[in-house]
Length: 195
Image (cartoon, rainbow, N blue to C red; front, side):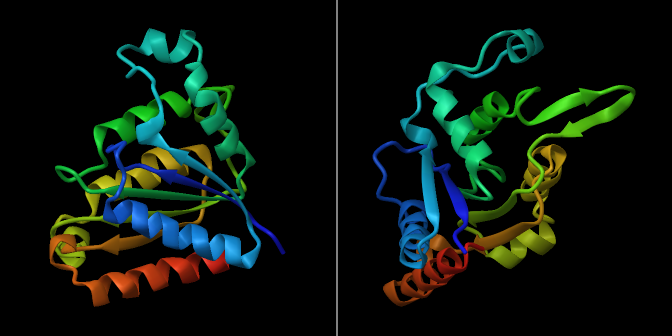
């Protein structure tokens, strides 16, 4: 059975060519080989302003450049986010993208006196692929993966996306070609499985 998958490439360098891009491509290759449906969103290629006030978030329309991205997220059964860890969190451009996209009426809705509102993106699962310079175990257990947990709980989970799986790739500056090939094979397999 075919799964509808949207990959959000969150590396902020529009030139591409980074490990995040190669990992996403390995996933894409698996998706295509398995016959799943695919859409991609490359955040670095999008032109949009950062939100600077609650008024802008509530009252100003979604920038036209982000309408296709919002449609791709709504269309998907499974979402894959790929980004590098910068200063302990996701790059600012990806955070700004998510702030723009996850607006009331698309990602959630007010629901009477329920302060949590209604989750409008239920029925979608996600995988978060994060590359980092530190060992992945240090990020997960010493730093408690705080920024990743915030993404999963405060953004994805808040709008109903579940389950959420993680792929953490540490010590990226030290990866030799053999190690990279193993990671590419892993992402390819995840693409085949739409996982």
